[in-house]
Length: 219
DNA sequence: ATCCCGAGGG
DNA sequence: CCCTCTGGAT
Image (cartoon, rainbow, N blue to C red; front, side):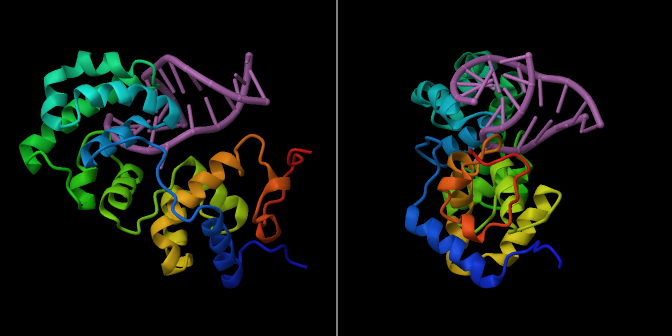
């Protein structure tokens, strides 16, 4: 008999019903005070923990919470605040140049459309999706390492690239869950369906999940 | 495919 | 020691 490789429609709806019940109003764990600081925080979060990003941005945003103030800080100034974050040289350069471009091309505001966001240095598809979702309330699906892993383990997608997984999720997730699905999957991946040692025994959607761990889940 | 690149956890 | 963390540019 063929091994199941995809989830049924009712199973998918039930997954998000449970994730919603566990966390009715999920929000980003990145700290920000406006669209600009959200954009910067997301750029800084690449390959880094948001706890580490928040520690740096609490001090940084106190000094620079607008593109104009960020430009005044300059690259060396920015670097001092984010030195504890991985990839900090590229990120400091990107944050400065991105701030300059916001002033030059967008009146100092964060643009809403994907093309304009992705034209900014350090901003790719995933970052653009997060900003569009969190700052502007659009039902985008940002596929990061967590979402990619959770989607493939559970059977929500079998995509081999982030874009394939994004397209699968947009097609498969019921409309009423679309806006928050990204955060539910992230939080589930961060605290339960962890990369190294998934906590299947305490997982709320274990009975619906298609993941068959080669190594035992927790015990 | 490779580089960037520090902190935290196991 | 090792792996992982809301990736992007070349």
